[in-house]
Image (cartoon, rainbow, N blue to C red; front, side):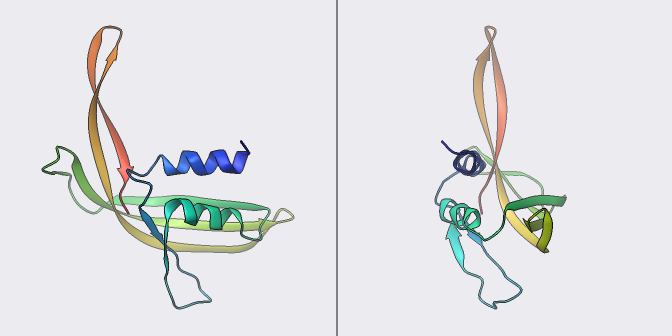
Length: 126
């Protein structure tokens, strides 16, 4: 498996379901289409850059966690997303957008050295 394919698979694991969507914005286009996460990541991989970096910064909790009827905990977070595209080791495109998304904290039990531990996993639920 290629490095970019492995990166896509690892990124998809950050979401609770693969059918979650990502809204895309552009300084050149007014429309903000949505893509399922796998489709979005494949589109990013096919952009005309040698290197792409997507970073999250300035993460702020916008709400407290609340327990849902399914036993999971839910909250909303607000963060800045930095997108940088480079060619020939030079940045040719960069932008920062503010995002708001729901996160899910799922609690599960795991046996470790004969002890049962409760572990929380946090997923994006865009």
